[in-house]
Structures are given as structure tokens and as C-alpha cells.
Picture (tube, rainbow, N blue to C red):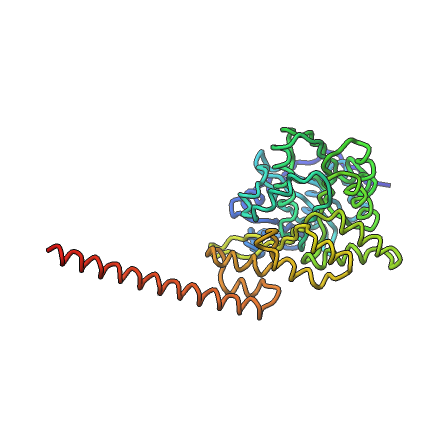
Length: 396
């Protein structure tokens, strides 16, 4: 039997305190607020956990906060021991929340979601990502570890489609994060648990709802993956995420989800529908912020053949060599580009790279080439100044 909450008995004092700390997190440009029974409130700021208070949250405080935030869903929380929902601070910020029980009581993590929709340009993502918005069919995946900005990157793509195309967009999320208003497109958003039961079930239903673009928050299981691929094969653009570290692992994970007897069929299907993989890692910038280093796969004949033939190990080289023609790139190429722009340090590039030896050699070559060009530039300036002095002397 689920426990009910008498809202009239709540003072919402804990919610007021929560809003204070969420405002503090926003002020410090933090990404996550950690609220844990038995300790003080902390926030993740520039990738590090920082204390935001000295006050310790008691067991009773945690339960009260859960009742205030969940109200009618408190019984569901008691039954399932964890729950996802969104919390609105003000007109500028919402938060994706996961609340759960741990040994000392209730804990919750609040992930910042700006109400202002992101753009590819504002996120400093490679311009080629804008071209994905013009696709009419196929599968586009954004991958990376938790907290790497996958949802934000997808939001920038949906935002652009909504502005420049006349289509029907359906998003299936757990929970809904960014909110889209209809612009050139119709946008229907469904939250798992609130508006839909599962990703796979919602995705099957979406195919009967005249969609052009379907965003699936996460491809968690084989059924969702297979349904998403079917949707892409039947003329829809499907966008989704996977918790994989790079393009090679992404392709291997999808194929490996299926039984051995099915894998040849899946390779053929994936090679046909996969349009792009955007894999990202957040790295620290020189100005103490964070930015995404992005590995990009864009479909071409070589990539299609490598997937069909099961030669995932060669995909890295294909991305590296396709940079100029197809605008693909590896993580190390992305990091080197950020270094050349003066946005990240040499040490951060090395620490975040896929191959420390290769990136160190590339950095050494870049620095030496830059130094040589600087010497040549200085020599040119000196020669020009000497020439000008000689001309002035002759005139005198």
C-alpha cells in the first residue's frame, strides 16, 4: 500500500532552503547539486564537488523534502526506492532530479537545465553538427559518459530543426528536460512514467503518430535499439544517446546487443541507417570552465563498408583521414584543435586524450611548427624595419 501525503500539513520550509542552494549553484555556474541525509549540501562546479553549506541535513529533513517535492508521487518513491522528476526553480532554470534512498536516508541529485535552449554555436560544437539537422531519415547517436552533455547537444539539434524545418518532432525522455515551444515544427514531448510506460513501447506508438523526427532519450535495451533502427529504416530521423566512450565502442555495443545469429543482419541494417555518431568528453578550459571535445563520425562509403565487414578497429583511422573531406574527427584531433585555439592547456590535452603517446608527438610537432613560424615572422618584421630605415636614409 502506497503512503499518501497530506499537503496541508507541509510548511515547504525545506523547499525554500533547496531553492536557496540551487540559486547558489546557478550563481557559481555549477552543473549538479548533491543533497544527502547526514551531511552538508554540495555542488559540482567546474567538474569538482564543492561544499555549499555547513548545515547537516537530518533524516527527518530528507523525508520532509521528499514529501514536499513529490507530494502525490511520494508513495511511488517509497515503493520503488528511487524516482526521476524535474523541478522548476524559476523562468530561467529547471533541474532534472534523481531522488533515492541510501543507508542514512534520502539523497537527491539536481542536474541543471537552462530554460534557454542551446545552439551548436553557443556550445562551441563543430559546425558540421548543424548539417545533421537537415537529414530526413536515418539514425544519429550522441554518446559519452554520464554528465558529458549528451542531452544538451541533442537539444541544440532539436532546437535548430524546430526553427528551420516544417516537421513533426516527438521526444521520448526520462524525464523531459529541455522544453520546446512549437516554432516551424510541431513538438510533442512525452515523459517515461508520466506520459508513457517504456521507451520501446512509446517508440512503437510514435510510428503511428505521423512523425518526421523522433528523439529517444536513451537506447537502454535491445528492444528499443531494434525499434529505433526500424524507425530509421522506414523513413524517419531518429536521435538518441548511448553511454559509450567513442564511435568504435558505440558500433560494437549495438551489434553486440544482438545474438550471434542476428549480427550479420544488424550490421547490414546499421550500415544502412547510421548517419552520424557524435561522441563527447568534457575537458577543463584555461579559464577554469569546461567544454566538449567531440569525436565525429559522418556516414560515407568507407564507414559503411567497415561496419558491414565488422572492421570496427579501422574506424579510428577512417575518422582521422576523413577530416578534410567529410569533416569527421577523432578525439585527439578535437583536443589538438582546442589547444590550437588556446582554450585548453597542454596538460589537459594529454590527460584527456585517447593515446597519450600520439597526442604528445602531435603537440610537440604543433609547438615546434608554431615556434618556427613565429621566428620566421619576427625575422620578416626585422627585415622590413631595416629596409624601411634604408629607404628613409636614401631619401634624406
